[in-house]
Image 1 (cartoon, one colour):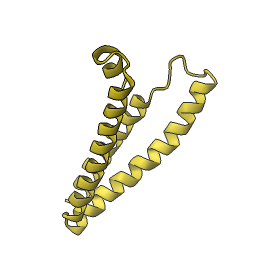
Image 2 (cartoon, helix red, strand yellow; image 1 turned 180 degrees about the vertical axis):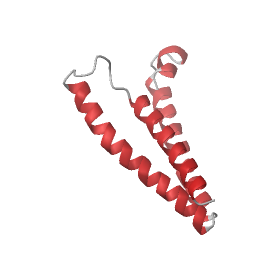
Image 3 (spheres, one colour; image 1 turned 90 degrees about the horizontal axis):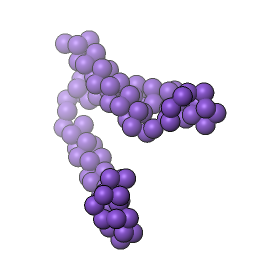
Image 4 (cartoon, one colour; image 1 turned 60 degrees about the vertical axis):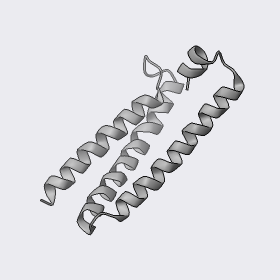
Length: 105
């Protein structure tokens, strides 16, 4: 949320709060849409997706917490940004979903 406040509305609090509210609203709608999508899948597809989600959450917890601690104690030479964790989660979900689909074909 740094681009908008810095470059578009010059750190005006009202616009920043509106942007955060929009972000939360879209996030909730995305969760609801994903839930409906999972409910519409057949049993095998649902199993593959839920296994992929479980693996993704596990990897995020196993990697994310030590990654943050390493940043706090300056073990790594760069700042631990949340975008690194989001990228890892996306790659993990994609790979585990492809593997699950291939495994049950």
